[in-house]
Image (cartoon, rainbow, N blue to C red):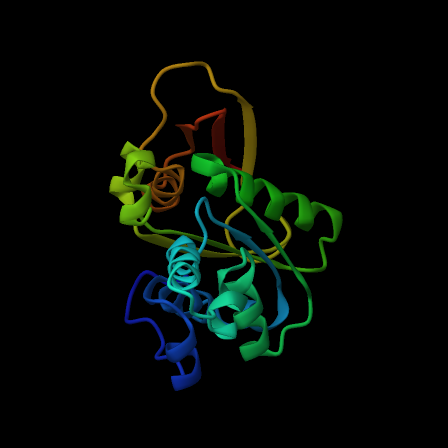
Length: 210
């Protein structure tokens, strides 16, 4: 998505239904232009809309029925569905969660989808927020880099834009990076020919294609 200028304003319906971080992800997706309307979506998130799930559980604990809208958006692909309804995009989408490696696997899934059908662009959507207070004991150092949203429009290597190559291998050991997503964005903006980010299970290597 462009890194200059404000994100587009969202219609009232989206502002009412989406959480604050969900609004930012949808706005980032819409800032990618035609891709939001024509590309297949890959949504990656380590925790998803966990705060919504906690709210639903709390409602049940108090003997209240959860809101159907809250429930529909608590599922892992809820934001992708909401975006596709708004844009009229019927390409379909994939949603995945891989803990601290969610961005890396999301990018891998997007690349695999593009390799399978080069004529169909892919919009990678990544979002994560710190775990709610109820899950504070499970927070890690990676939560310090959150909240974070990323939207990347990907096309075939012979299309417009910069060509990138992706590799991954079992992690060589040592502490994982604070955020693979941030490492990738720094790589894109730096102009460096190659970068590596250590994940929880895999080392992710990116390089600019010749």
